[in-house]
Image (tube, rainbow, N blue to C red; front, side):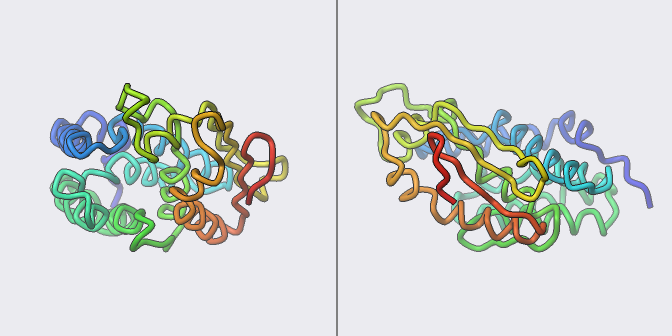
Length: 222
């Protein structure tokens, strides 16, 4: 059964948009970096780029975009286990929109497996979501405007002055290229915060039969 549920349709759904807004507000109250529309739209674009480049069909790409748009709504309940609670929320929302069960399974499986503490790549959609989500590191996600009160998460994110995700020439590797202001944060501090996420990206890339590589300030790290 064909589905009318598209990425554009999801973005125009007022209930889903409210869950995204409120989830981000909850994280803002706890001092977390931005997880609102800028984040989920960037993750959707990255996930789609990965699957399109690797030759996946249009509907698989679209489901990855949908999963990316909804992947953090569980934060409205609690940051802990937000991937699983978000998957349950997404099931109800998408079921009410009459999305076919086969497509709902793909979306909620990706959402439920995007957190590095409990998740893993199970299919191309979940693998692309993981890479898109974990590579969204950038200065503009930091909400705190007072550098003197930065914690390590603020400092590491703020230190990333350039972030680019793309494929190498023969599409055998997905490459995260970062420029870090080492006056603000060391490369070691970056890995102190993000090591688990980068290892998750490497495993997700392996699921897609490609490599995950990192360049920081021009040097290859992974």
